[in-house]
Image 1 (tube, rainbow, N blue to C red):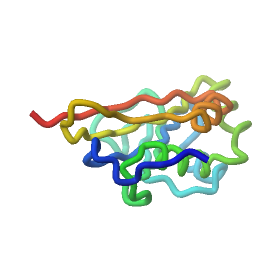
Image 2: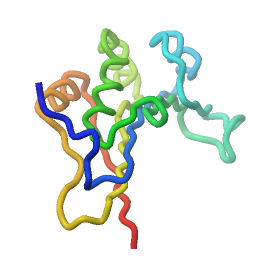
Image 3: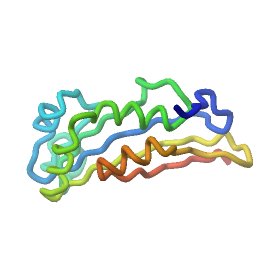
Image 4: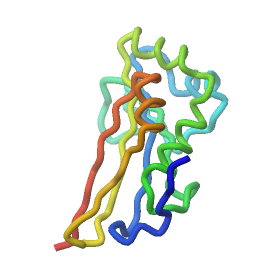
Length: 140
């Protein structure tokens, strides 16, 4: 088991968001299929957003649910939520949708350090066919 750094001195705060984008499948259908309440959704018709979207969006964030400055904890939590839903996620992508994780990481401004992925996260993400991206912020 990897050693986590929940008090990572290189990080001020971090969280991760599972994003599921679909063309035809409505966010309510994603919620029903996963049996998980999303943190937020949007509809491609724009009824719940400022501007119309090209696809429907379903989002689950670790913000407020995982208290750690180690991104691996946040990704692990999202991966746990997806356990047993591999075929569903493949179906979303096969129908032209996308699934990924977007991670927010706020640097403490130290000269070294950054978010980490371990072999366990990489293997699980690969098995799900999921990419991970980071928005990394530095204070001036």
